[in-house]
Length: 302
Image (tube, rainbow, N blue to C red):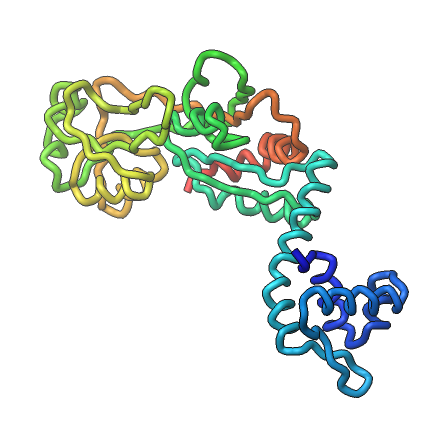
């Protein structure tokens, strides 16, 4: 192959600087070496790459086509080099953060902004998980860090899990729903006769978990908390919602809150990661996510 990254780098430098001598200076080479390299490339390719226009070296049509097609390769090579240098320094090329659906992902944005402002080049990838999904993402290699992983960690070890806080839930129903007219506290048998709206577990390999669902109860599965709230308001079913969200909708008259004979316990959320992970970006986020001010913002009532 007669086209190399070195040749593309030469073409780019000459095009940007306007002459062989200026390009040689920018690349810390002597002008004769640049002239020789371009002449050799033209001989191997069988066509001219530059022509003289006054004192400037101007790309021929073929040379322009070659450089335009090659610049993405130069960019990719530079990016690859920077990533390798970054990994060698202990900073991951990419950090994948799984966020449980109970925590709005945008609450991480100020922290990510601070990370970028500090000059760290690690790329951040966010994903949303439900129920066992965060734990599964860690064990399955789909995530490096989980924010808000609910409930207990799966058995077997290998994970570091620290409590972040808890979320309270309340039973919520649309005012027009038939169950809204039933006497409190609502029993399990009474609730079971009505469809439950639940979040679909995103786990792939672990056993799927359910929350607030009774045996034999009909189910409508939705992908996220916003959809669950909307389905409750639409009267499509019943179930538990985070207290702050449910109370907001109740204040607006879109939902009513009811006591149940068996109250649902708060859900404990965790910050978790694979214990073997030693990356600097993971350490940066795991430390800052445990600071009081970030915790308050992360779990703030809406």
